[in-house]
Length: 245
Image (cartoon, rainbow, N blue to C red):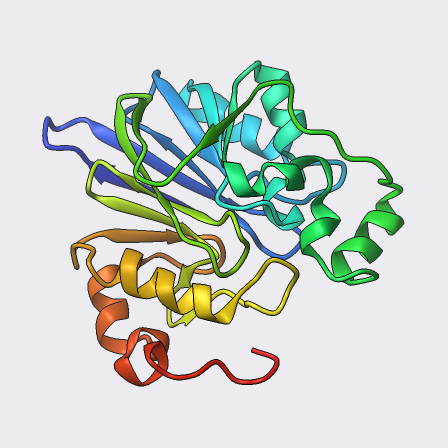
């Protein structure tokens, strides 16, 4: 699935997404135009990895990747990050609290769970972080490929989950916010109370026009989610987390 938007100066903005074969994790690719620099988000799980699919998109638009953004350290969002980052010699940006998961993703997953079973079937027994890792923190601002990026630390799904606003037009929400849903909080380092706090402090204040690029599922907007997502309503946000949530 791909999507083209138009920037104010009339040049086509490249926005493409590759849904990984396992867990259908969205790997977003953003560039200001064809024949330019780009960055990618959350290269997920495929056999042997997602690199060939990403290369196909890069070649189609003649793009030069300069970084990988990782919204959190779950394996379905990081499985291909080392192969991609090392292939292109680009840094991997991840929040400080989740960096350890690049080399040891099972610290935030249930032992013997589906991810571990898939890795066993694929014969993957060892993980290492990419050669170049840059830690990001809440409120940090920087530019990538001509885009203005701002980091928001949004724990709840994992301790180091982060969201990224792009040019005040897009929100890369990872597994904090989906169309009509939010991320689970019952895995190691997850927290129902932290999730509520992140939704209140990081999502509610956002511009309703922001286009949400989630970790799974279709695009949406902040305005649509504020009006219809049950997890952004007062009843949920100020409720006491239930057992097993």
